[in-house]
Length: 455
Image (cartoon, rainbow, N blue to C red; front, side, top):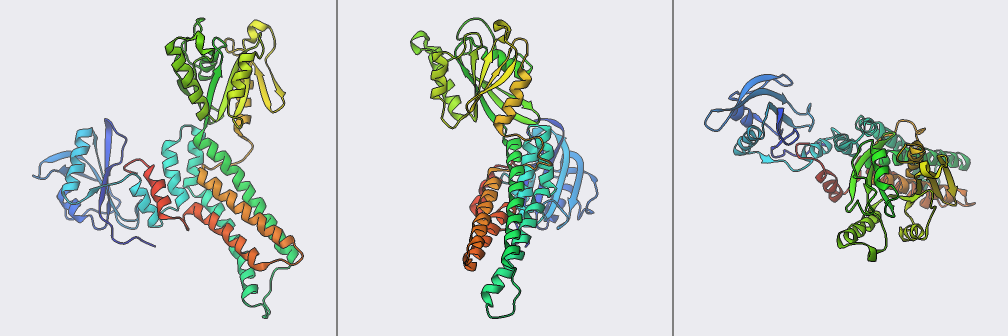
């Protein structure tokens, strides 16, 4: 349903800073005052590039460039859109924006162009979110997955599930409304089959969504351990660069060193921290570094607890492992096998994986990378991942719960069709929230406020 006539918004649509080309974008109803005031023309032909001077208030040229006009509804927002492609100097672009404001436009809020596209049915909510995710993608794999979501792959699968739920609800509701009429309801066995099929389809999409969430968000990994076990050397080896200072002096790393690395398309945000030891043996600066180490560990998704392979797991290492949050994913990395003369290997001791490697020679690094992906939950065999957000995963989990409850109701000797119909309705509502068919306004505000201005 198109939105009512909206005010005209304006923003710089290109990244901040200087560049060869900069774009100022306007969107709203009836842009003729801006076409006359900025270009000195009565009108512009739709979807054609027109060379023109961009004029200031006194008729002097602010810039020289290309104007593109998109008439509603054939535009990104579904409204009239005017794009001014000029030189990418900040002062030039700011001058054009100021002139647009003088003519009556207002500065766009973050994500307001895409929000209007959503409200005018140019994009559904999952596709709108994919716009921001494509811009923010940190790896090529994440960008490809975001593009699948933007093209509608995710939305089509969700809508197919909704359609199947609606079909099943139709027969159920008809039976409830006309119990004495000759209305064909699905026999119990067929209904159970359909519910089982729905459950399996939701589970498959949920699996892909979890993979997409990992692609989008990556994994926060903290390197933690006692001094001189090789944490900084391990960071340098993983990053394939000398990003951290390495010396034989205990306590060289005083503050957290952050580096993003990529493994199989997954962004890992790795934090090298100060070595943890008895505070009485540390100076004031090192004590501050140790405090920051524990703060970084508390915020991480996964801990790489680095120990000296020759020494084994000492009482100090045990204390570090015990202090980590109980539910934190962790790997114990036995470094310096080049000194202990043991081969690179992976071992499991209970629920904890131990990787033996050498950060100095690189032996065993591939084993650590594979173990990290396994701990993160990455499954390379899952096909065609689409980028997903936490709210998508939560909505799919909710739908799965309601469908499971519907199946349990059907399994009883005397199914309560009213409750069965309600569970199907709740599952449909959860899925529809993904594409924005049933979405509160406050959630929309939260989603679009995280977009960049001009998009």
